[in-house]
Image (cartoon, rainbow, N blue to C red; front, side, top):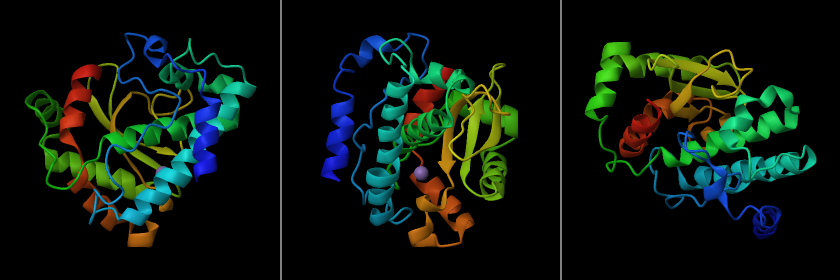
Length: 234
Ligand code: MN
């Protein structure tokens, strides 16, 4: 892994001014590089086991970042001028490799941030709770609808809670590494939080039992992060 990590870092050596790359309107700016995991591989136990986390972060997510770096080089994307969010918003202009890996990198960068050790998670903030009750009826109703979307995603993909243009919350699912920021996505909005339901996210511990993984995942949701994110994008 040292080699892969090294090559990723080297290929991004010229993107040392990420702060300047990000438009002020960018809700949660994500640089094009793979950031350090904000906790240890074992931090999400028992919901998500350490080996799954290590392989997920160092193999799968690292590969999306590496392949994204190749795609932005090949397709001459000036990463000092276009934010990753803006790239996703015009992803139909780029290759399938760009679509899969820009999505994969963005989705995983967000995924790591919105989890935390069980017991460390807070609860939805008052503004977020108000929005959840307005748009879903209750937190439990939101969870049920979200779980259904995650369980029902055929094959690989993600389920999301999004903030739509009219500021309402909605629940959607996207295939593969697509996300609701993409111009070619059927479901469009700002992702508030989402779950990775690719088998690589749960198979070692849960095998075919995706619903058990989804249930356990709620215990590691980092509501402090989500509350802050909601304040930025709503
Ligand atoms: Mn994944």
